[in-house]
Length: 397
Image: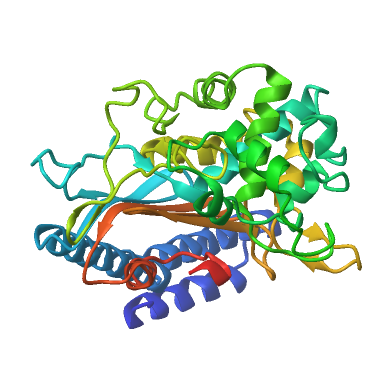
C-alpha cells in the first residue's frame, strides 16, 4: 500500500507539473518520470498474495509427502508392506520410496533398482512389441491370427481382437488346470491345448469386451513366430535396451538363473509366494521391472522414442465393438472415459501387485510395485498415496 506521506508528495509534484509554465515537451517528460516512479513503487510495495498462496501450497504439499513417506516407512517396518513407489511430474520426481525385503527368508532390503513382477502391467510391453512389428510391415492388426499361427483353431479372431480383449477366448489357466500335467507351461503348450480341446468361444469376436490373459499369451506367440526370436529377446532388443531399461527383463521358470539379479520374490503372510507351473508362458505377464525403469518407459512413450507419434494413437484409442459402441481399453492400457489423455493398468500375480497411471497432458506418472501387502488392502495403499498427491489421474485414483 502507498503511505500517506507518499500520496501527499505525489499530489503536490503532479500539480506542479500540470499547472507549471514549462513547455509541453518538458511537462510530458516530467509527468512520465513521475508516473513511472509510481508504477515501480507500486510493484515493490504491492502485497504478494499470489506468492504467499503459492508458498503455502508448496509447504502443504511437502508436508503431505513427508507424512506419506513416514506412513510407508511404518508399514514397511511392521512387515505389512514391501515395495517401491514413485510419483513424478514434468520430469521432476516428487516421491521415490523403497521398503521391505527382497525375499522372506533373507534380510536383503529392497532398493529403488529392485525389479518386480509386473503381472498384467506387462501387457503394455506385449502390445508395444506387436505395434513395432506392425510398424516394420511384418504384421497387420486386422489380419486373422491364423495367418500367423497355423495351429490356432479360431478362424475369425484377429490380432486387434486379442489386443482389445474382444476375442471371446477361454481362459488358458482353467484349461491347463483341467488338462495339463503341472509341468511348466509354455506359449506353445498353451496353443497346443487350445488346438486339441477347442473350447468354445464365450461370444462372437468383437461383440463385447472380456479381459483375456489367453489373448496376450497368443500375442506373445505371434511375436515369436513373426520375429523368429524369443519374446524375451525381442523385448530386450527392441524395447528395453533402446530405453536403457537395465533392470527390466522377461523372467519366468524357463529363464536362465540370475538373468536379472535385481529381481525380488513374491511374498504373503506365510512366506514365499512366487512363480508356479503356469509361469513358463509370457505376454500376459512375466515382465520384471523397477520404478526407475518404468519412469524411463513413460518418457520413452512421451518422447516417441520407439514409434512415431501418429502410430502411438492406436494404443490409446478405445476398442470399437461390432455394434459401433466403444470400450475404453486400447492396446495394453485402460483409458479414462472422460479424459482420454489419462491411461492406467494394474496387475496382480502370486505375491505381487503392480500399478501404473499416466496423465500425458499434465506429464504426471505414478508407479506402485509391491511384493507383499499384509494387513492392508492395495486399494487402501492407493487411496493413501493419491490423497497425499496434488495430481490428476481421473477415474484411476
